[in-house]
Length: 288
Image 1 (spheres, helix red, strand yellow):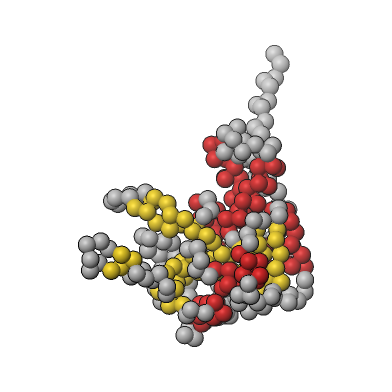
Image 2: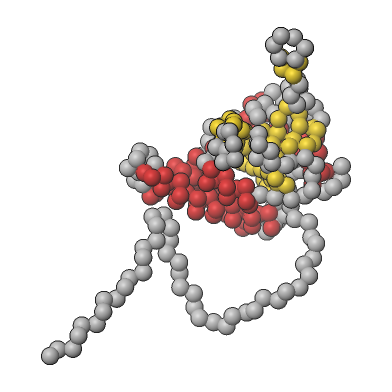
């Protein structure tokens, strides 16, 4: 009687589309980490600034210390403000594709000494669009429909990996001494409330998966708006505010926010674009 056939070899499961299989690590000695007191060294801030239209997001970035402004395709805020003399001349560029953006960041990482102190991205929604376009081209044959990028929302799942690689580059640039300022447009969306009635809230105009990764990565997520004043003395309520700028640093039902710096819940912003960033930074360093 012939010997029994050996059991079939099980192949490891294939990784999801768009995700590379993990490379095997060579065997070697394991270095045990040492627990010790950490030194308190201030790190350049990584800030997301979401704000309503016309609040002054782009001006905030343009007046930051030694900024470089990176605009996504279709963003014209800085050029428009520069054309009417409302922002200073600074180094700026427009990125048309996701590979071009990553190549620019890689080039900055190769420079031994950078001439900038702040890297400004205008704006998150446009940067995310470049990422999604590249993922759609690379992994879904350029199809956006339910047979491609949007099939079971797989495109967004794949794109998160690419987005995290983008954040990893920003992390390395922060390690070279650059402050990172990500500007975000806002929109109003209904919020599903598991504890009661649903309500509307301001959200950043990116996909929730993109936002979750960015929110976790950032040191501070700030929401800029105008102080609302309502006159209810008549038969109908009238909004009579909307001139004074404020920044919210703590999450509320109306908007998302966070800060690791112990900033106050709300910061009043002077009516001068040139001091928006310095006002924020003063609270970050507890200098206010």
